[in-house]
Length: 156
Image (cartoon, one colour):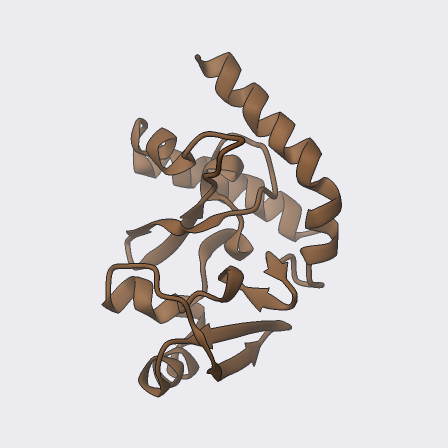
């Protein structure tokens, strides 16, 4: 089963490499059409505990990434502390980094908040729900591995 999961992560990596290159900003954020988190509100994950689609009426560009918010209040909260609300690993799949796989796109509806940090995960018809995979192993160990991998990639 481990082999199949790794194979799927590699397959998805290979299939998305062209898309990933088009989505990257100079600071390694996962962007689609310039939008971070595929247009979902980063503040809502913390305060609403659900993924909420942002509204273009409430937008802010931070470090070359455009964030959308579901309300003016959420936009103001983000402005007051963007580093707190910004997703880990540039908004790429946390599980992929924990397993050494690198930049894999996410499903913004798959997320986890740990120690006041937002982690996003991959999930679609072609591959596994990596949030489920993440939850099968100790969070601290996964974060340690992902942080190590991210520091290598983000230094490039």
